Length: 340
Image (spheres, rainbow, N blue to C red):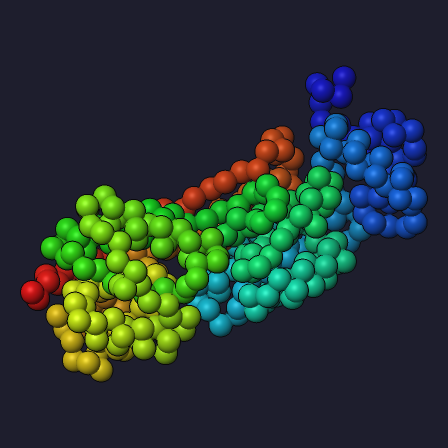
């Protein structure tokens, strides 16, 4: 009978041979339960595919639980602010409050924020993973039915719902655009080594485009720039090479800003440039900046809708992956022909 309907807490209790109150204590971490009993309850939860009705729980325990926790790497990055706005536009009409915290791109602070959100008994958890995170510690929460969705980057160490941009495809399209305009020596400026998922994917997209065009990968044309200043210095180094690139691909918004500054200071209007991520005022630069634009608002809304679908009892327990496509916006800088 359980296989023909959604399993209930009573089904879990019968499977283990305990009371429904004991199962509730385990799932809500509300009161003492023997370690062995806790493990048996969680095993039964996994076996039966039980998912608590968290929205109903929130209605019982009060509005303080009607919240979604969101962990982002940094508050000052407009990209993640727009992601948060997309999330809020979806959850607010459902009576849920969005709580946001910054991990400063550290695994320790990320985990601390997650612990704080779990202590508040949030209805759902959304995380932009830090560079060195390991999310196996959330397996029990996910098995217990807490909706957990990762944004911009997948989880590490566990299978979980995630929503990402088409990083590899977008980078490949941006570099191929430069190739199509006659460039054969294309420099790469990004955040290296490529530890993060987004960095790896974009670097691989760069290499994919070169390979598809029959162009060799030249390590001398690859420079790292963690922030705007470092990226600007990286561009200066590339332009000083004996055989410098005629075009640049900047793998994130900070790299793009650094490249724009370096080219302006050098009075170089003969080097083509494509950036990954759009920039404010990109249209008024000289020349206007060609970009591979992400849609951070769409990432946020898609992730929030996924959380709500889990809260509403989406039956599949398999991890769901959604990829938001990027868009090449040709404005002028990426269409400059090679000067030699």
